[in-house]
Image 1 (cartoon, rainbow, N blue to C red):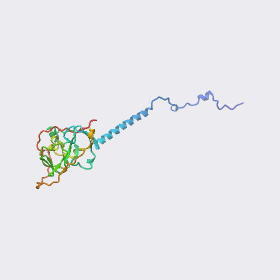
Image 2: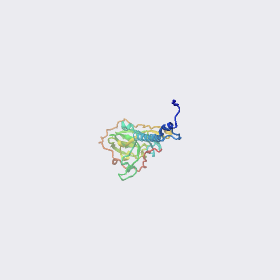
Image 3: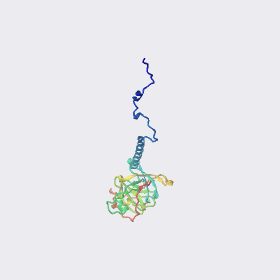
Image 4: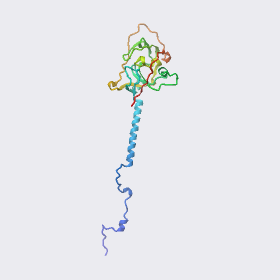
Length: 265
């Protein structure tokens, strides 16, 4: 007489025919190491972070600010040898340099002949200079009797190491150019040798000194002031002329100018 089969009973045949779970569904044995994909993803994130940091650093240096150091005495007493500076590049995108600003710039081609004694016109100075803006575009400038004259008015300068011992005949600064001089007037290869600096050569303005710590802070421009006294007698009008190096009289040999170099890490 047939009986109902036990529901919990399974024959050997039935058990053998039961399908096995796929390999992917079986639990993995722990290995103690993170999955390979996570390791690769971590390295990619590190590489991306480093790359982005480099791009930002280069972008800031190119368009915002950069560090420079002073290797010479041409700007004494304002700037001393081994001073570290921040040169900002933003403000001159909105306005031109002002009288009294201390600027970093690439020197004109003629500077190689006057500052380094290079006779080959194809040899150019590859390092930047740092000087102070004295005369602006279109202004007549003259140096005589130890004083700088701008449009026949003496320039008051309380930042120079000593009064200039050279003469500079009257000349007019070309458009979009600036006459720059070192504060250490008698020990500086500057515009009184080789003329004006085109605005396109200007890198930026020296804004902040971060070394040494005892002189840390903003660099005061100590803006030069023109005396308002009128000349005693009318002065002859000077026809506008550019300020080429040929108009500058020869001067005694000066110590070689050392350019402003990028700050060392």
